[in-house]
Amino acid sequence: MPEFPEPVRTDAAYQYELGSCSRCRRNGTQVTRIGDITSGDGETPLWPSRECVQELLTRHERTMERMDTRPRVVQLARIQAPRGVEAD
Image (tube, rainbow, N blue to C red):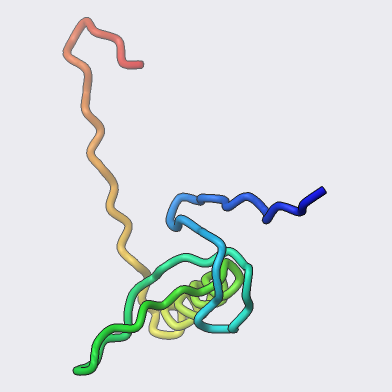
């Protein structure tokens, strides 16, 4: 019976597909495109693995903590229901 690759999972921030990690060089792993390196000669897409994305996010959080800067969280205003109408 043929072996099928692990299904590609999607989380809230990234969509993953099977490929090669541009950071750790693993092949046949879940990767997502996070941007490009651009120079006068062209662009190189960045496709880190799920594990490398997590490591990059952890490094980012630690850097923000050292800088005593936290990302701003935007909260949407609550819409009040008109009088006599119950909100869901």
